[in-house]
Length: 198
Length: 198
DNA sequence: TCCATTCTTGACTGGTTCGTCCATAACGCT
DNA sequence: AGCGTTATGGACGAACCAGTCAAGAATGGA
Image 1 (cartoon, rainbow over the protein chains, first blue to last red):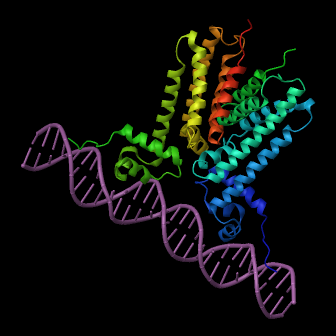
Image 2 (cartoon, chains in turn brown, purple, yellow, blue; image 1 turned 180 degrees about the vertical axis):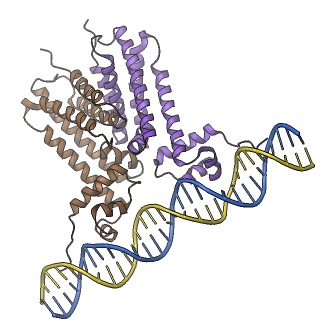
Image 3 (cartoon, rainbow over the protein chains, first blue to last red; image 1 turned 135 degrees about the vertical axis):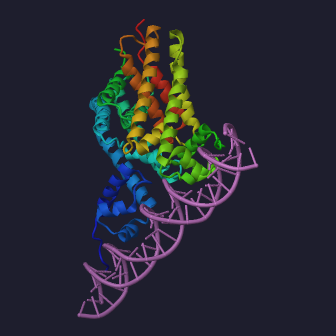
């Protein structure tokens, strides 16, 4: 009946993500996004409503994909739970170190810039953080069942600690810490996790 | 000889800090700062040069005061080194929880928004982080001398871990974590630090 | 008192940016 | 093919904002 869209919505969101990610919300112009996607501004506004709504879509998307990725990394059987945990911690350190542009994580960057004044962003960030914590807790509980981590410690508290370390690695990376420092932190964090008494 | 300034430079910097802190760099207008300080824009530009330079002054100031404050909290004799360390960790958790506006730390917020594209900010942030790490390392080494922390672990690595946890607490606080979660993290982090074998 | 010098104020400028609008294009249905 | 509907793209409007400027004010010295 009507003229169909020429662009793929998801692809536009991905491109917009790149723009917001490297420039931040305020410093990114709608025209930057229009140019990067090859769309006219009319199409952009027609499809997404406006800058704020577009950012909300991008942010929501990003949070979801982060949680998904971590979920894929951490889910599995008890026997490999500890291996998955340590692989994940090292992977975050390596990814942060590899991010030479120091863009950090859009979740952190967006929350830092907007959470205070934008309830939608704040809520989404909170939900993502809670999901990450739950994933870590699940894996740590599996470690405990498998005898890799002391069973007498609250897995929720350990998960919160690990999450803080991961977020801290990210923050330090953005501030320019070296790859060595970051992997050291990852190593030390894993080393101090309480082992079961044999 | 000449007309003297009517305002106190440090006071203007403090007011500007508040503005940049809650709004971020891009979203804060020079006129906001002019209104908040009661100054005309001409005076502002005359005294500080421009928005970017003003921010650099504010940021530099802030980093310095943070390092100073931590330095005061952590310096002292070996006997109380562990007490100072744990007090500091709890203080960060409490301060983060008390920051209901979730503004976080200007160091983190400014770095997140600008470090990627502003070498001056990046450098200053890096220097501040390194100073914090050195302060922690000094205190941890004192703990080791006093027998409160296992002496066979590199104090630099433990300091890096603690710093990551502190930065992580901050990041989680900004994302909306509860006070309970934050103090739990502080408690758990202190609990997992390796004790000397008795 | 008068002057040189620096500070103050707020109106103004030039450029930038969000969002709108409209003429036109592309599609499927009848 | 004709039509209704929705997408497109770029020109346009209005608001906003960093930075400038000129006229006047406050000071200490001559």
